[in-house]
Length: 497
Ligand SMILES: [Ca+2]
Ligand SMILES: [Ca+2]
Image (tube, rainbow, N blue to C red; front, side, top):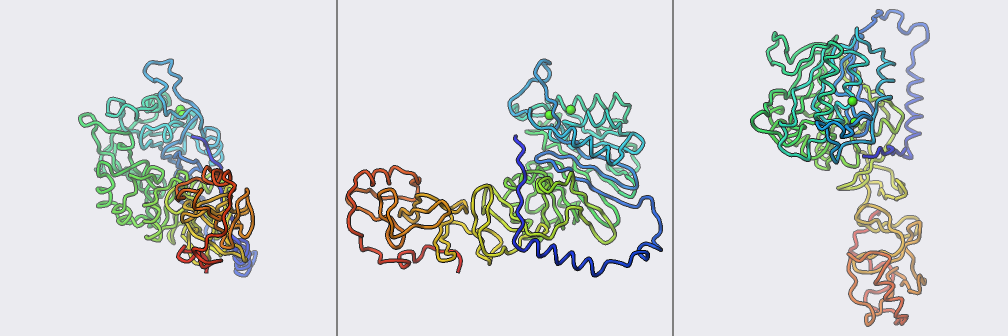
């Protein structure tokens, strides 16, 4: 899957807000010399969660008091070439993406080494979660490795095998090679040797959703095996949910036990099947982060989080803004993020309504006007948080049409069974000739009822009907059936005012 450059747009108010915040900071800035004069010096007293900026891949680093842990390592450039019969090069295996250098550079910068690297935990054996695990384990030598047992024989659906066995075997091999304690089964008992409860500096950690047994009843997908990690520090609670889903009722069970979390790493890159409504109702996350492409965010999940008032952040957006990771710092007063920004951002979505305006992860009413994204134009009417869909738009004396994808129409288009022509910048043409066809004062194509069959909305612009009509070359006088001008558009649900 190709890496897409994250796209982000500064709203018109963005710089004004920046300026206002900047001024506010200037006003409240402490007098130099007094600041920190009585602050006790602490080498460490922190709890941070670094979600690496990888689109469609999970790599999360925990840091507390100079100690480090890691939950998944992300996709790597390596993949099975098929020369070993145990590891066929199956279709669907990622042979393109890998974050090896990015992750090494980040861990190096943090100063991770054998002495401070307490544990690595793999949530489940998919390459976008543990592909890079063996490289990280060999290079940084964690003291413990948590990784549930896996074998392809536990999966009952052959197309979902991918290179699971390859990445799993390599991670286990690496753990053994560096002498890490390999823990493949944990107990909920606190005092057990391999307890699901442990600490990292000031963090209390709990492995969740670990008690599956697929030796008898097979899983359909390794996501069904995903572990999660609950992180608690300074009164804040974060849940890193791997690819946990609800196909086997896992989220229903977690909804009963987890309770409110302040921060949620959304399950399975915010795909459908994970982050179900009842689960989100129980967790009511204050903040959520998606490690996937926003345009593929489940619409249901998106709307649910909006209803809950959850701030939604994405690794893709952080990447587009040049952050190597979204760093959440847990403190007594709440959670702060290195990526915090009060600018308005526009987010495009592949399903549902197509363009939304957000500020600090919450939907906000966008200023009235056009927003360009990837060569397409979207209309915000100044009263809603999302762009207009299937609507006429009047702006500065011109008429435009935004289609069912929220995109501004250009060229020939059928709207409500009539042909219209829009210039390259979207302006509806009228009282003029285009392609040997006459456009009436209301913009609709002059129709010759004898030479043109019924037009319907599924006709594509371009276009056979137009060509056919143009070829007849027998324009008739205007058909006086709807009256002139704007009256004919009545009932078309125009946007704007
Ligand atoms: Ca790989
Ligand atoms: Ca690897």
